Image (cartoon, one colour):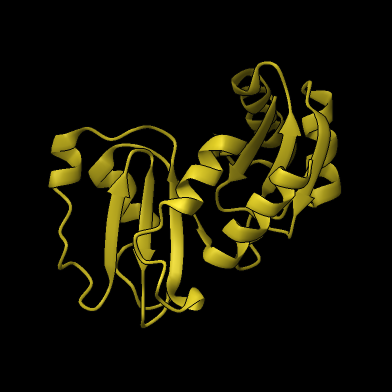
Length: 175
């Protein structure tokens, strides 16, 4: 079955450098097949009967070889496609749209604790394990960060811009 691994924090701002060739090899050695990456920010499409085991082996190997935690959020092709189709900000300019992928489904109480006014002008909607984000002033200016969502929702998040989300949907549909 086809899955998407979204690695958090690699090859961003010159930190946590992990060449995609090495990442593909680590996935293959961990039991994944049909491994493909998209851009240098840790988007891996792969097939595996047990994706959670593959992800656990990959994170262990990244830590051993590169010295930093390999945090991974998994999605199936169906979950990614459903999130793509559920975008509540679909009419907004694509450059203002982002999607946070959560490792775990947050509790209702945790979602309720989020401050809708934390970053004036920016909007978000939590749906299951996804947070849809509209940032008209750009990601660099928003206060709706990984650290904020991780702390409030008690999970791990990783974000992708809408162009990347679209490309990943296309890749998974073509495989």
